[in-house]
Every structure is written in structure tokens, then in C-alpha cells.
Length: 213
Image 1 (cartoon, rainbow, N blue to C red):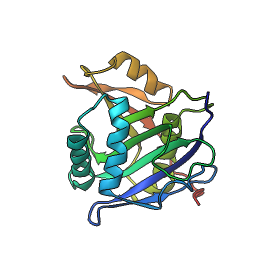
Image 2: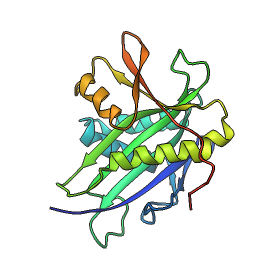
Image 3: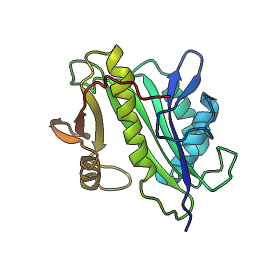
């Protein structure tokens, strides 16, 4: 069973230039990931992963959807965390055997007073059986929190934590399983819900020391 080496980073989204720029953090390898990805290549990467984790075979339409998501100024996607696992001596970032990714948007979810960072499209794409102490989803969750506490909270004083929502009637999976799954990452279920979603929050505090590199 493979024990991949993971390279992990947050990609900051520039919707005007249609470029995603890599931000690395201390204690996380990131060298194999490109320093920049244009939206087409980023969308290709994410749609290839989502074919595995969301059973989405229509990659072309999904790729176009992701480009639109990254380009939109409405409920803006501002970061995409990525963690990809590779066999030893791999040099092509596309040749990963295990990976995790998500998108993070700024939205008030229709009921919050201020826009807050909200995690969407959490995905793990595992192409081979792997042996690892920490899943790439755990890594991207850590990176989202680090970015929020070390960067976002310094410029957005109204940010009070991380949010996400769980579909009540998903095409795949169980909402009960997902609610319990995210609780393992410190999320709590909010009293507010509607006919489509359960909402969750993880309160976090601003980090004084910037530990990125």
C-alpha cells in the first residue's frame, strides 16, 4: 500500500485576472504545486477530482461551472485549498494518487449579518489505496483555518469563524453522516436551518503570529 507525500497549499483567487496564486504554510510541503494556476487549469484539476468524489462524469460541464464559480463576484470564491499526495520522485503535479480540495466563498448565507467564509465542495479523490496518518481533507481544513486566522481576520474584522452547510436531501451520502463528520473538525450545528440545508459553524480567533512562508 502506498504512503504518498502530500503537497498542500491555499490558492488565492484573483477573479479579475483569472489567476489563482499559491500560498504555502510552514510545516506543509508545497513545492510540487504550481505557484500559479489559471482558472482553466484549476477547474480541470478540481473537476477531475470531483469525478471521483462526487461521481460527476460530465467533466466538461462541471469544468465550465467551476470557472464560473471562480469568476463570479456574487458570493465570491476567494480561496481554494488543495492537498495532493504523490509517489516518491514524482515531478508532475497532475500525477497525484490521493487528494483533497474545497472552495471557500464569502457569503451571508441569507441570514447572517455579515459575509463570512463558507466552505463548499469538500472533496477527496483517491485513485489508489494509500496508507496515511492524516487524510488530505484534514489538511485542507487546517489550511482553511490558518488562512482565515492569519490573513482574512486581519483585514475582515467582522469575520467570526468558518461556516458550511449540509444538504438535507443530497444525491449521494447521508446528511447525518456529514453533520457528524464535520463535528470532528470542530463545527457545531446552528439552530438556524431551512428546507434545503443544515448550517454549521466553527468559531475561531485571529492569529497574532503569521506562520506562513
